[in-house]
Amino acid sequence: MRVVVKVRARSGEAQTHAEAHDYAGLMADLDRPPPNLIVEDGPMADHLARAAALVTVGSTAALEAIARGIPVLLLDDFGVSPAMINTVFERAGLFGSTEALVDGRFRIADPDWLADNYFHGADADDWAARLESLVAAREIAPLPPIERRHDLAGGALRAAFERRRMLGTHDRTLSGRVAWGSACPRGPWSVAVAG
Image 1 (tube, rainbow, N blue to C red):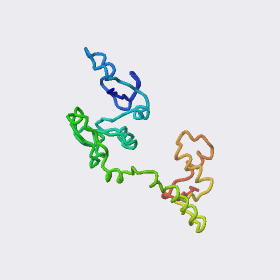
Image 2 (image 1 turned 90 degrees about the vertical axis):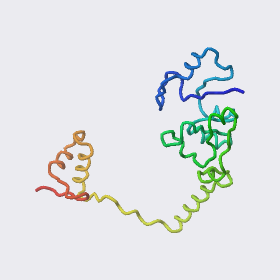
Image 3 (image 1 turned 135 degrees about the vertical axis):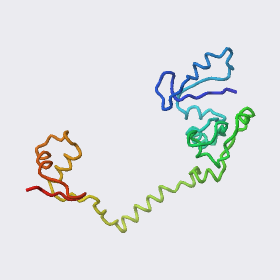
Image 4 (image 1 turned 180 degrees about the vertical axis):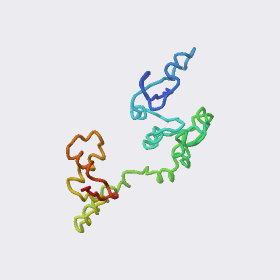
């Protein structure tokens, strides 16, 4: 059996998580690494396409494996916490120790957890039909116009003032300078012009 340590990036590439040690470098430092233990990079989908099982502490790779029906083992030797990014898997029935890993006791996610987390078959994909029915209902009874949230009363002067307010000194227009110098806001939706 081939055991692949799938790394996020090639050696030397920037990664989301700063890793203190390069796995390939660690393997090279071993006197006699197991011949079936290898380190590889590349797309997770490619690795999962030929995987018999997946072991991790907490990773989106576990979600991908679960979606493909691949047995998973989430190591809990390091705890279950937000810091380990694995609390989403609580109640999934996938946690186990390194002893379970040595024994090859990988698991399939609990059906109730799968249902609660939107893992379902294609027969349950009803979103397209539901969207079409909502669009059809809107054509029969159009939605009322959306009420404006921001009243930009004040016309061009207000628009110039708001542009200057947002862009600051980067607004180099004459209208922006005039609006900034002659207008002051009286609240969130009105402008008073100094006269």
